Length: 272
Image 1 (cartoon, rainbow, N blue to C red):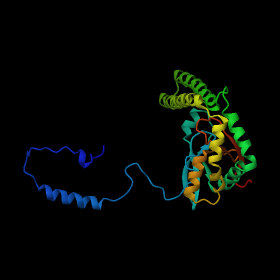
Image 2 (cartoon, rainbow, N blue to C red):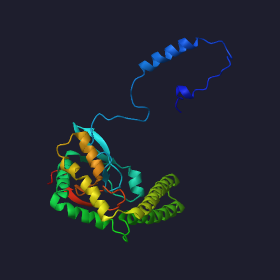
Image 3 (spheres, rainbow, N blue to C red):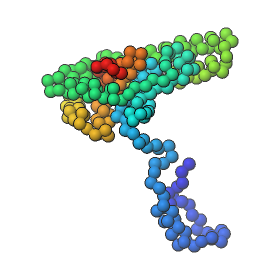
């Protein structure tokens, strides 16, 4: 539903009605309109005024969904808003709103990255990653996806039984739809994980990758916000926030073919 560019417009060579203006006048007016066009993102593209260093990298432990950025009191937060009906249908205890302040995480995260990439610990880091990617071991993502599929199958059977027992059809139908959607996502993850497991990296490949990003971890403390966010992205930083324990599990996944990670669990909201 977008206008064709000028070179793709279809113009009739045969005049079928009297022109309102001649071609030269039309061209000059189009040039004026083009000069006045505001330079802004297109429909559906939103610019944020505030930087989020961990955009798309924080996951809520309760529902396993990505937490969205939220700016409040001149601070960057990440929140997870979970519908009551969805939590009830999936038998998940989830607060209505889960908030995590970004500043609580950045310092221990940078400390951890600096320690992982210290010269005398670099070989240990490579060994850990190579152990994760060792052939003959089923990736954790595959195991997790199969567990979700089995859980969804159990819930679907329960939902159908509730429907047959006379429960509200509208509510149960919504539960079934949400569970089927969750099962479909798990099946997609299972296919992607199984396919990705065919090309696991060797230890030498992992060593070259880790040594190439060693310098990034060394400068992450002094980096500007935009650069720091890019460093986190290239390092494959992933955080899982457990609001019940007030803890964040930090993982690093620079190898996109590896479906497991090694990380560090740290306390937030007043902890060290």
